[in-house]
Length: 324
Image 1 (tube, rainbow, N blue to C red):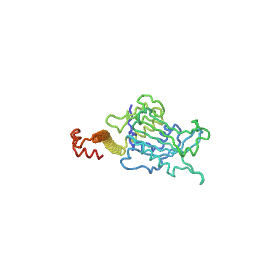
Image 2: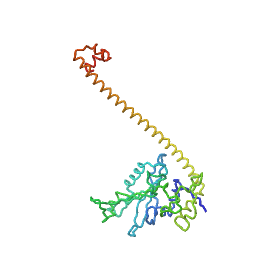
Image 3: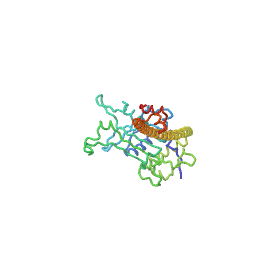
Image 4: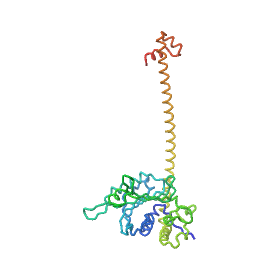
């Protein structure tokens, strides 16, 4: 039996799901591969409401995790979701704002201030290059001069404050097999676009067998099932979809124009190169002609005689012989 859920690829649906702390803890725990005991949405003052930036949705969490030692640790998670082709510069600028924000500091007494460890998560609605893995984990490590990993004294506050780990999920690369390869693919089946209803990309039809006996996944499905039945939420999905369809069409048109402009520039560069080559050939011929005229004059030929033998006018012969 199929259950219809709202498609969390849409920002309004994703936000609705992640505003539920239990849902946020489940998603973040799977991504981090660590138990998240608390997840609270932080104020995100960096969201740029301009149309060009709406293709990238941002939401930040302060998450309390259980680390390898069994201790609780507060970390900052900046989650960015893009379902159109992403510009890396936008991501970099957003990351930079976090490094500059004094609120992303943990203070223990007036003399002990240090930056919170940060993890950047990118949920992409498109693939990056030829990489086929659904999830990528880019973790920073410390090495000595000889290239040997340094483990003693690591992790370190100074290092943690200056570097951060990155998690990238390519939604189009999620497995189409009936058996998920790992826990991430089990939970992220709610993002798998192969479940879209025919003719309605706003709704996914998820087989109940996928989440039977899985309390965490069942919770997410129920949350998105509720979203699918919310009339106002579905209206907002329609608005978002219409906008992004228009934005995507505009981007494709700009891409075609950029390609055409690039081709025209390439043709122009080729013509300029050909013109430079012809000018060079012409200069070489002029030098040869100048040497010939000077040689003929040195042998006593008049300008008129040289004109007859070369086909040049007397005036041209005189000017060339003078080096003009």
